[in-house]
Image (tube, rainbow, N blue to C red):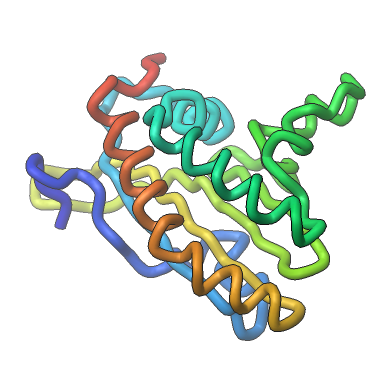
Length: 180
């Protein structure tokens, strides 16, 4: 149950999400839900762009630390992913993420690297509540590791990942979702 005090809650990866069965045995699978106001836009891509655009300043600092560490291991950095200059390729990206699929209710983002592949789903879901039906935005992440480096990496960053996702959804809700 989502409350005013804590509008973001952990939930199961929704069965209707395109990432729910993306990997047979994911090394990480989590999801967080936030209730959308009635007048919020209903475009999952625009909602995802809003969430990632309005992240707290400490998230950028954390990503800089991450980049400094992973660059030494030859992994893709956020700076590299943001610096793609090809306009056609840039249209198929959302912040540091490649856009894999779009539908009326979901956008799936992600990246493949030598240590792991991951997908992020931003899904709108309508649920019945005591007050009637409500729309929720659910951000799900699934990760498949290829090797020991990937498993070490995901164990090391998982607590930060969860903190960033929750913080980003809370901040978007606090700022106020874009309206139709």
